[in-house]
Image (tube, rainbow, N blue to C red; front, side, top):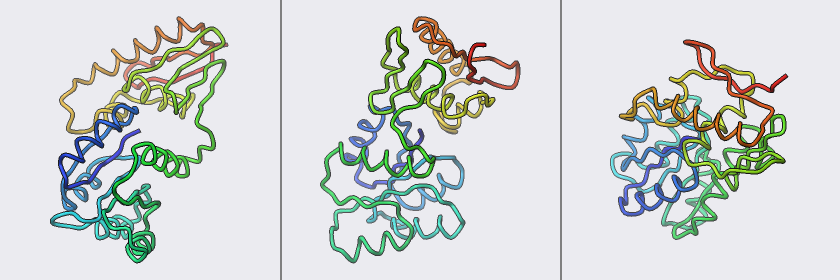
Length: 224
């Protein structure tokens, strides 16, 4: 799952990015509202964390701009302010949630899970296909034969595949959703991670497999 973090305090931004990446989110960090608008225009994200008090363009204005364009991406507002009026203004502008600083990382993660779950219609912290279960809370891929705790990119790829069974996902789509447009990674890194996941599925005696359709992409299918 890919997030945009717009926070002008660079030390806090760095800390939040580390927390989010440790919990298997892909994160792009920007430090002002203008950059946030440009990234949202150019890239595809699953959620946005917006600080209200930012240079160039404040978070509320960013929120109003993207909502005016019909962008319904989940937005969590961060601010040092805790007054009721600020919360109301943010929610009225179209925010999905609001978190006042200082906050605990566990609360931040819970609120991100909640707002992205609502958007995708997910009602559970697990995905299941065949005898395979992917736990979004623990990042474990399991079958009755055992389990693996997936690394960041592995988890994100498996989540994308299991959320879209029998659907072809191109290498370009994986790069866009997980590495981002401005990544320096080569596209063959997708195949490397597909190989890691295939080996784990085989070790777990999974009855699903990652199928390759030449020049088109990858899909997750049950073994008949």
